[in-house]
Image 1 (cartoon, rainbow, N blue to C red):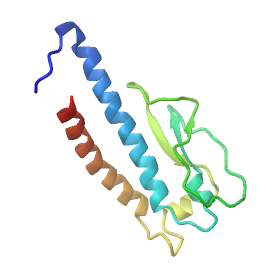
Image 2: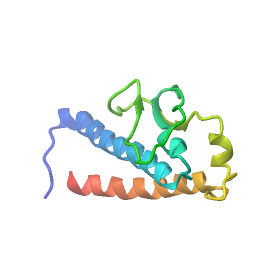
Image 3: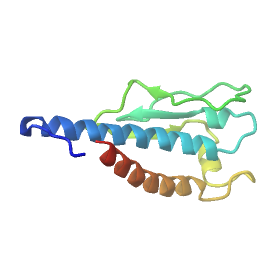
Length: 132
């Protein structure tokens, strides 16, 4: 069933729909990176963070991170149109792991997640469009 939107409300409606897609994209990227992360103690997996307009954040201390953490947003609470979001990992060994230095993670796994996210964003956009 088609939805009636007043002309004066089109901008707000489009922004709301885009923000739904943006949130889904950021959450999906964070989740897929954590699922694909090699795990020894779980520190690397737990250290993925999402920054708004920057990639700040510290490092998780040594320890046992046996459960997969939820999204860790730095300096903001909800994704909004007009900002740039980065999913990053500040551990000193994050880049070698991302490049496949671990037997648990082949080279190119991060790029594989990025390709997977592109497909999932298209699917999410179609779903949001159908539900609107």
